[in-house]
Length: 303
Length: 210
Image (cartoon, rainbow over all chains, first blue to last red; front, top):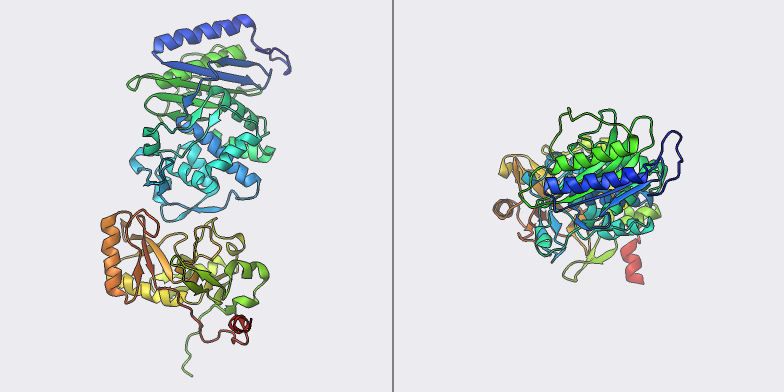
């Protein structure tokens, strides 16, 4: 943990506090029965870092959509797309395994708005919003089909982000069965989100647009769930049978934000995943702000 | 003269348009289709001044012009704005679709990118009748989405019974097949309505002379 004091009134946590957080997360991992909990934190106020298994690779689940958002905005940045450009909504994609077609089943998608637009067109900006805020798999595959995996990878490379490995779209069951999956590390997601939070992803304007989309997140049972209501969080969740993640930028009132990624792996039948992420988030919040917060009283939404 | 109604859009000679539009529309140019045959692209187009015009011009009781010109970001940029250009054959295709609509007895929905597509549209590889304005992709009829074999083949059969000479793309997920819409096309039809600018020593003559 580096320790420069760069933001008035905000001090980085000392070694004892960091050790205590490590111990707390070790205990939480045992108690929750998680196979693994990885955490990466970067504090823009103090430039302090916290890392726990931050370079461990996980199946990305829907957190890969943050990289896809970056790819879309890369295309906008390069002038290949405009946010108001329109795209044909078509539910027909090609597997990364063999090029066979597959569809995103409506009953496996959290969002119905995009499915209802099949045959018609939607704006790129609206699809990007649905991809993040309601985690629409159809919107995700449409956007990836348009910009291409190469564009996303090139954007990651241009911004020197490692720890994100994009291989395919979502709901590609044939690829999943063959082990062809998108992967992330906690460090990778924090690198990406830090650039966005610091408005260094392409341009301040485009970074703010991406942040606006991340702020619209509707699934709030992870990072934000146990934080005070005044704390704003721009984030993206991700969950499949064996992993549950959340990564985002946390804005405590009156303080510069910090970036956090919490990646967890579980037995398929395990419960308490979101609560575990919320507890990690809560512990990091207490560490960085020095505030102790009461037990949760807010309603959360699954997703 | 028995003229009682004048179609509200001017006919323009694509060869007289500005170069960016000529490059996009490729008027009168020859291209190859999937079978390797050479096909001549349309030279004459209706000029559509605005989206509002496209919305308000009923080609038939069941089909407005806008339904044939919905193209997404994959269309070349110069053709996503206005004025926009659509081959003159579009009016006759609308008449055929009206007949099909009568046969199915309900609304027929043309998909985005499923009407006119310029030769530069990113979805095109070889020549496609979409670039003649003579093909449509129908994704929905009434409340039925055409996304399975049963629905696509049922309506394809009905189209062939109703519309002499129509070609329907076979069901399937391979190249040249369709599994999420009904593709109807009338081939590489060139239309030159009355009022089209006179064809002097145009492209064809120049081509023959060269």
